[in-house]
Length: 90
Picture 1 (tube, helix red, strand yellow):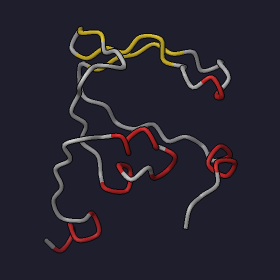
Picture 2 (cartoon, rainbow, N blue to C red; picture 1 turned 90 degrees about the horizontal axis):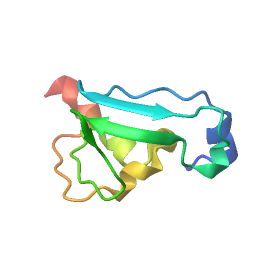
Picture 3 (cartoon, rainbow, N blue to C red; picture 1 turned 90 degrees about the vertical axis):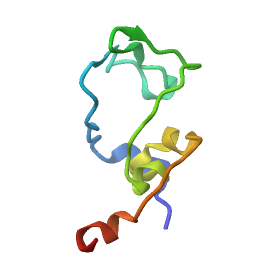
């Protein structure tokens, strides 16, 4: 079952945990429709740009676009293991 965009927009956003050394500046008051709220994105002092290649670790739900994190569906060179639901019994 897919969730509509309006339903996703109505949900409170839950921030994701980030790696040590990661930082950003953003404008939370900028309209969401503009989609570019982050103004400066850095990891260990290096500026990240839209062309930067980074490794992201996330569960299968989020990498499938769950909770509105659709940008994670664009990931390449995926490495997968057991499904999240199977982890407690593994």
